[in-house]
Image (cartoon, rainbow, N blue to C red; front, side, top):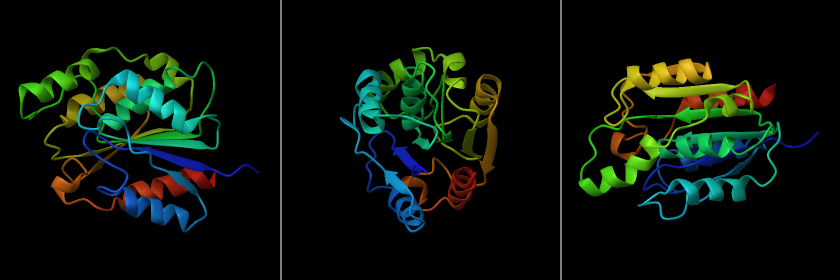
Length: 194
């Protein structure tokens, strides 16, 4: 049996060493699960095309033993990568703090300019739905960037996945003091055991 692997795409200004990534990598690897967390290019100015092709390069051959996790803008990179798969399947998707059409509390015009293509370029959810039947989104009820109700509604309507709402976890980032996400680990272990 082919080994299962988890590929985690960090967010804007993130890295494989930031936030909860080192923790989840260690936890999964202790169970002999391969974990890949690439350092995405130009992380301070993420661009759709560059990030999607980097995800593709990282994944190489997607299959039903491949599980993709995204955080924040990394969720968008994962979804936009799935659009390109043309009937190939993956094992499952987990989006942590995903957003679709709006982001709040951006701090500058420069940030708004970087975010704009991600917010305005349509996502082909029909294509994405063909890649797996396991979609889960994890939101926090006090995320300063992601409007909970709006994004939860889009996720449920477009992908029909499972939604988990965590209390008081902010944007699941260092600014919110989040270095572990036990609910994510449990969910992944559940996915990977099936």
